Image (tube, rainbow, N blue to C red; front, side):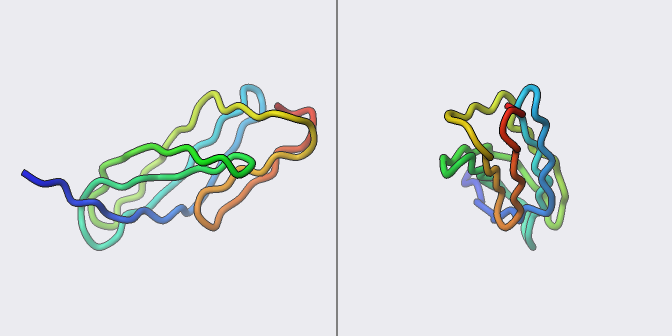
Length: 89
C-alpha cells in the first residue's frame, strides 16, 4: 500500500507567547493524503505530518517552540506570518 503525499495550504496561524507555541490552520487540496505542514521560527523550519481529506481544514499544533536572542521573532506557515514582540517568549 502506498501513501499519497498531498499539499497543505496554511490559512491561519495563532501564536501564544507564554509558553511560546503556535497552531496552524491548514487546508487540503483535491485529494486525500498525508501532508507536511511546515512552520518557520526565525528561519528555522519545523514540520508536522497530518492526514487530510480532500478540502479538509485541520488545526496543527506546534507546542513548546524555542527561540534564541532578543528582539522580535517571526513565526511563519506558508504565506501567513506572525511576529512575537521582544520579552514575550
